[in-house]
Image 1: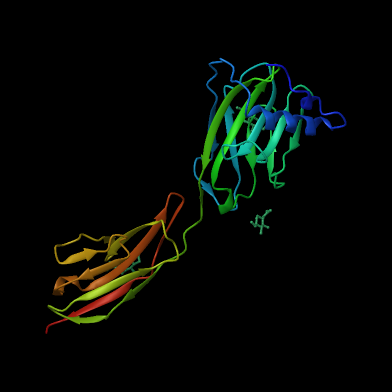
Image 2: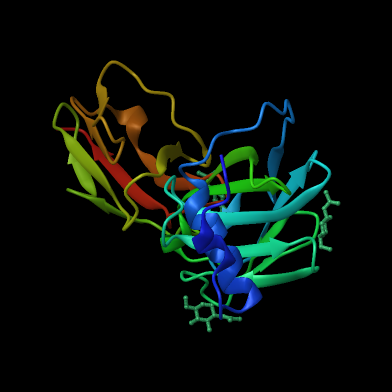
Length: 236
Ligand SMILES: *[C@@H]1O[C@H](CO)[C@@H](O)[C@H](O)[C@H]1NC(C)=O
Ligand SMILES: *[C@@H]1O[C@H](CO)[C@@H](O)[C@H](O)[C@H]1NC(C)=O
Ligand SMILES: *[C@@H]1O[C@H](CO)[C@@H](O)[C@H](O)[C@H]1NC(C)=O
């Protein structure tokens, strides 16, 4: 396939020319290279406000460019391009000012936000304009969890009555865990947890249920425990 004349892009700056190249590559044929480019997230778990480096392993040789873009379609989603021939990097249309692409293909993302969650693609291009490799990286940005608050339906309950404890937390997708007297709560057949584990119901209550309850919220990067709530059980 001949190079489309638009690639010559008369009057363009070198990086605009690269951008043109990149946007047209989507419809070009793939080379038969067997390069196994892999991307490693450093650190593996990414927290809002921190930096992450997408470390590229086995970058093919004899490339003219590495292109990073968001999602799967290259058009308009280019973050940055590294022109290996002229040895400089150029920002793409969606570059936010926080990304740096290095000669070795790695991409540094500074001060990540929840909006950075998603798919990132690295595409490498050889001097014939062939795509040598396309590697996808999924970024999930975590927030540090906030301390949950534990609410009790009734702090003093008579034996044989019921009580509900509600773990209040602004987080949706985190895991909830319950503590009783500073130990992991052992569920009995009188206790039920809602599917999300946010509500603990004890029915019927017994003397041995009296004590301190806490809930804990955690995600892969942090965990927080509520202040204890004391349940008193009186004989009915
Ligand atoms: C690529 O370059 C960056 C920045 O200099 C560096 O942190 C990273 O370790 C390099 N990656 C590899 C695979 O050498
Ligand atoms: C990081 O991003 C937030 C907004 O997303 C901004 O308020 C903050 O100033 C940024 N921090 C740095 C060090 O750039
Ligand atoms: C739980 O731990 C706290 C702080 O370590 C302590 O003050 C409290 O007495 C403990 N409660 C029980 C029931 O062991």
